Image (cartoon, rainbow, N blue to C red; front, side, top):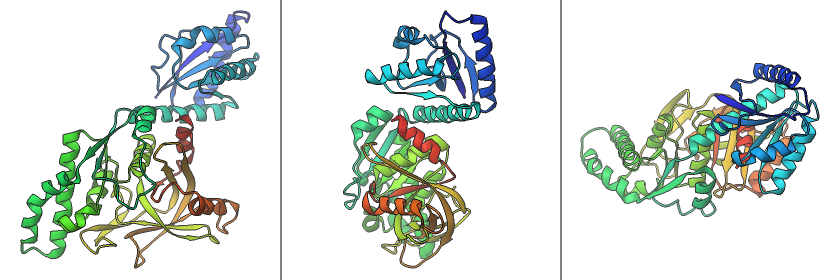
Length: 403
């Protein structure tokens, strides 16, 4: 990734001294930044062409210079300052001006280790935002009837993330798959093999639809497949997610958007889950679902779909360790981000097939755990949430701040 640095320095300051100061500061920051820092000097003509673009306020007395180049600066403004030569004071005046004129921005300031880490994080956020732009998300069938609070705001998705929602009748998938399904169930193959073959044919049909409509993610009204195809989309979604196509079930668009954002920021798949139980004393949360991305699990077996006993579901084993719980609302106006630990997997009767115990807060369920329980029990963002394996809370929070 390349970070472009555009500098502002008052003509009252010694230019040779300020150049030396910039070289020393940026060199120290570079040590703690995983991205290349390119000093463009006072040239703003390339502003916007980097993975991240910074306005480096080197000295005080630069507020007027900023106004001169402001027409070239679009979007959220990142202001870098070392704090020397009254640069922080000038940066605060500039940010105050931006905010009073309906613009947003951030001053990046602190010790060089913090500054380098923050720049690297923001660059990854910006790269993720660019990856999302132009994505087409397919909604195959309407959202399931029980998702009464999970409707997306398609205009907001378009305006803020430049995504397009493409609606596709579920009948198109069913008709495409039925051609082979009837033959399968008249075949003398074993029932288990027939169910597996049927689930794979659903996957193949979804693949054709993805290609036909040029989709980068899908959500499927999967319960409609139970009566029509006597099978589920669980295996198909597990495979698609593993192949880098975020895919959510039950037609849940906000869950899909959460998965797509998480994938763009981290390169990882997300596991869409139901919260099944809370142990507030231990700060433990039981999450489960009948599908899980196959690239997230160390092993898996096939089972039947929990609610119906039909088709193929996935019973997967996820790695223990750091995890992050993430969910965005349908209008992108709110989000939930929680660092967590995946403590163990389990296989309990009476629940969806892949089951994980997650801990949020400390092991004794102190204040942190209580606050998370309050979120789920008093102000949840819908039903489904998404688990990512790894500690991604910082980048998810940084992304949501930007939008």
